[in-house]
Length: 244
Length: 279
Image (tube, rainbow over all chains, first blue to last red; front, side, top):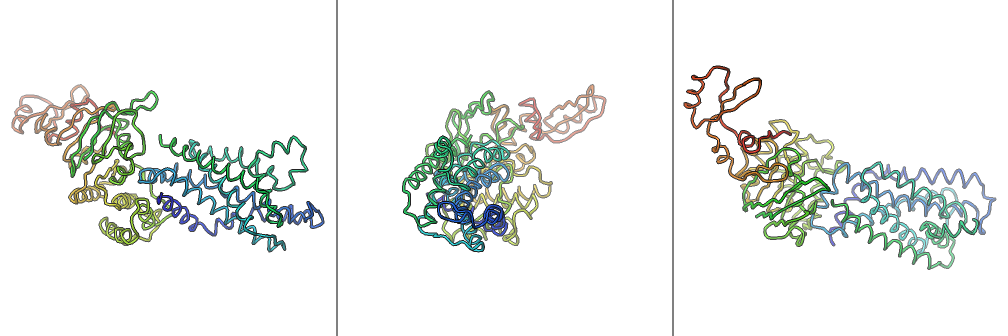
């Protein structure tokens, strides 16, 4: 299993090389959302007893940790189709489970980094929430789900161009509908039922609850852990399948 | 030692390998020669665990490539046809990651990187990002990287493709030195002179089948020592002779334009397969 460390180390090196570019890229989206929705809507709009800006920040944390964890799929595809590094990993005496573990950890690391960026931005916008253990646990589980999904899909696509399509189909709808910008319980009943099946809905619920210092809704945590574990196992099978 | 038993690979309707049986002895430099699409890379991909055979078995020093895959992989180094270095990373980082993938301890990794970069004459480029290196330098880094974990078998898949002749010869010297260090080398190439210069034995591969296996000298000797090329009705025809005198006697008796040269491995390939080894 030591092979995971080599894979993770390589991803960290790549992240280090592009650190300032990554931080800048992780900041652009949340800054725009904070200006447009946060400041634009003003502090007068109240949702669930909080200003809209306070409501929005945990949603951005959930959304950004999702997109950044999922972005590992692009890194895998560049390594696989462009630089052909995937072959170097496949020819090494490491198990496929070690490869998946290294890549998923890299995805979670990116998610944590993007959340740190949002916390700093939120501070500049005058919002400080409760970033307790349950907050970070929810972020890690969200990263786990979407990094595992990223490895699965990265192994199934046949070209780098297919990856953009998958992002459009899976990630973009989830980003807007998963309780990021509005409370899901204000949607019609049928929509609430449908949105219940999105992992991001549960990540938003868990992260928002922890940020507001509420008693954690353990169901969301268990559900994220279960979905993440299933996707992790699927990712392992997808790597095996990608061999030929 | 490398052993292939009835190795077969089908990609849907394409029969890439059709029952290959082959043994390569320890310490041997073995060349696998054939035109594009003949199954050279497929064989290497199976032997290095990158692909699964449809049928048959492959062993590296008695380790089955599928059943004992991790043990088998530990014994081999691979220099693939396409450059697969991390261009964002430095030469050192590329080699270091390889060492980590093969579970090498830190001290051993650091020593081995210095030793190998010295060996491939790239010590001064240790901290250079790979994207700043020339094609020949990248190839040498790939060879050094493949040697990091001291493999007993080195697979070289078209190691000099696209390189200019002087760099190609430099890689050849490197390959010879690696063999002298005790490694078994399995080389695929479509450069006939590469196989002729380097190999102890050569296999001619055509449409997924081995046509023949022998030393380059024996393969060439099957035809004779001298080759006479002449154009007949717009087509190049080659006649083979045991001695130069015999060839000269033939020229005196015939009329036309001739070119006399020594028999090479390409003659043997064309003679046995009826095809040219074109890239």
